[in-house]
Image (cartoon, rainbow, N blue to C red; front, side, top):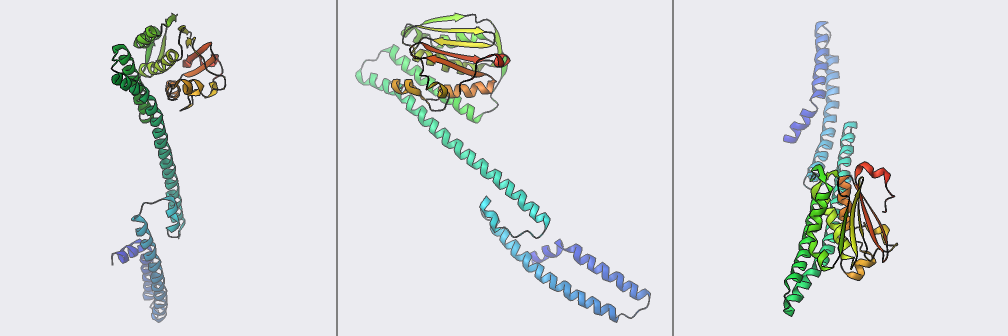
Length: 333
């Protein structure tokens, strides 16, 4: 009964106009004192046509509502549209096209989310493999009974670094507004990072050269420190002896080391996620996330990273801040 009431209400204009039309004709017959027999004949004939139309329309209306109610009980997907009732009007066709567009967008978003979750799980696997190294080293020290405080402190420091890396990774993936741009002193931020790794410089007997670090850049301090930590710690890891130098020229921050260097065939892929290159595979020291995350962070800051290297001679990493981007070398991708 409720469905019938809705049906009649939706077609109230048709029935209303029908009654108004025949009311006017009846009034015309009445005013001119004409015989009402033709009137009643025509009225009954059209009324029969209207009733027939109503029965057919209500049957179609009933089937359409049944289909729509069935769809409403399910999780609507793009392939569910084949079960939609056939559009009877241009408006219905427009609504169905709009629904199709919404579902296509929803599917694309779901696929992107699933791919993103898969990527995060893969990256977490890489990170987990990397953090196992210092954990295993600590376990070995404990089992051997050789509890050297300095060695244990170094391994704990590495664990903390990897935990900080995964935290920054999560921030990059989940928080797109975590940026506070301000004028940052290059000298201050470099010394903050170098001080953090002072123990490793001393342990490996590496010399450090700081050249012309006067100047400021407009950037986010937290993310700039993260980038510098990854680059400087990489320089320490892959330099057994020699020098690490840091210089600031115009808007280019240059970090050089005299380490083992990177093979030419590995250079184009050093910023790829999960790529460790020959050095990482041989030394078992890399997760393939550090430089990838650094480049992602640099993009957020409007900076660019460039890298040049020669095997057994060393590596040079350049951070180019926005104002001087156009004056620098071609980017290695």
